[in-house]
Length: 385
Image (cartoon, rainbow, N blue to C red; front, top):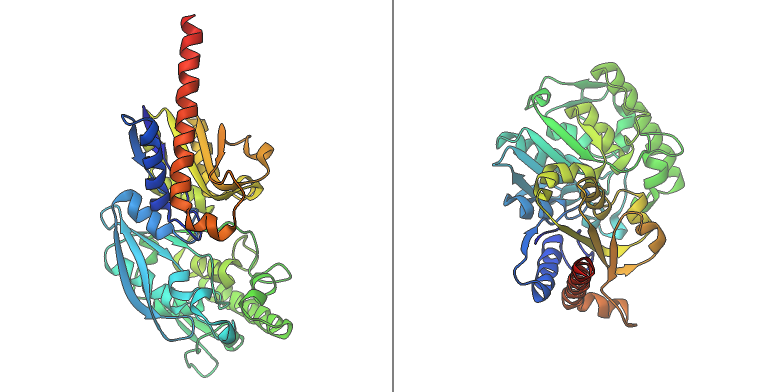
């Protein structure tokens, strides 16, 4: 029996690779001779680099870049497909977790380090880029990223703008003469699962600015700055990003990636499934096991990784079982998955569940396989009778 094991990370406890190995251990208890194919997954957010590098035997690298507060941080990225594709998580270079709460101010934080990661990938030979943009600390529309790529964002005196979204109120001209790479030769896919435009009441500043430290007054200033940015981009680059669905993601980085690299904004989980070549891995498979820390209505409605795995498995006519640390909204989930199993069967605290995540997942996987094998034997006996 060939089984594809394709879990997401169990956040706070197990990486996607660790979860895949735990499930495999549990399956082998009940089915020692099964052929197991481990495909750790992600949905374009945290853990995308780890999942894609692990599943494709890629290479993880680290680059010292300019962080969100204009300081230095070590940012990991991945190279896969023999170095032809680079995998980048913007949060590694410009994430909210890199900024202490007392210093959070989206007027000054920058995406410069994201541009440095893109440039390094290009210089190393990558021409396909997979970029996850969740968890940002920024609201600069990707201006810092553009400057790292060699674009010059100039004020009325011809001076380069300083870091941060607020500085965009002074933007007068975008000069493209210093760009270091030909982005028309590259393919940039951005994991973007929101539809917010760049500006306005549902734009980057209004919706996401407050969680990054913006006061109501700052939101107004930042929204005006991004509006100015969009106007200059439209005039100087010929790209209209202001109302593009997803342009407001990551403080407008979605807009910046489209404007300055020609990126495509795509559903994150599907983009990762494509990079993993999941459909090829499913060939000849009799069962798929997926899962994540919590399975609920968001799993089904918001395109999370296990839901994407389930859709691909069902298209291939393969039964799929999902294992979760906790499960809610079972009726909705059963429209996606043929079977559901929780790792926690008895009352315990969240801390206890996290501490015991691996053995609990191993045990849940063993239960799943024993039930499936029992059902298989029962079906065979019924047929023989």
